[in-house]
Length: 350
Image (cartoon, rainbow, N blue to C red):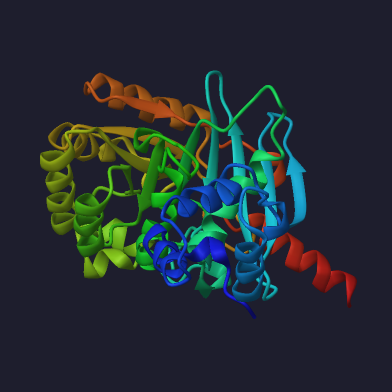
């Protein structure tokens, strides 16, 4: 198969063009066609010479994701299941809010980090996504948005661990935040969520300007290691140090994602250590009631428990939100739609 032209970095495309005697300004022309105008063929790039279009056609493809399934929740959340060229599937979620429209995108097909509560972990890691496959989720999702709306925020928190696919993720971020010939998102509107791969966090801080969210989910190493095997390699002390480094370099507020799981991490005894950590690191806390996953033992706390946890955090002077999981009626948690689709196909073939 020909390589996907959208996988070329700006520098790689410039070198390719230079070798053919083309001017540097062609880089932005081509990238605008790809990322701003959504060109599906080189023939559409009418401000390029016929010769250059033929050369591009001979050397590259413009591959695109295919929407395999789209589910819309009663609350407006849209879950998109995309098919890749090799048959693997990934998910993205459009989440409408009062003044913003957030798209949550995937960076891997499946995930290999084995978080105990996660539907994606049941799938295992199939492969990393390319930068083009990451960016194409935004391009395709944009077409599902009404003309009067636009995607305002990007969160790399779908299937997979972004920092386990570091090189391609950073390439994709470069396209997202390129205001000249990329997608033009401000880095302040792009958030990367990680389970806590400490070396890559430090590298990311040096190489990008995006916001940082930590999938925390516990305030002790004992509980966090039970839920998230990565904590055995990078315990809370090391993760905290990486977050402090982020604060020193960026001065921006960190987000702690904290999934409330009944009987595991939802007790009020967890509030004080969580509040202390949040205050120390100037972090806000997103409380997310667990979205039940078939075949996993975890349960969602009652609304009373959720509200009590939030109130106790706020009493500790912590900025916190209770983010009722959107799209609960369409299995919007990462990996759930793909699991559901696979089971429906399996049942149909029985």
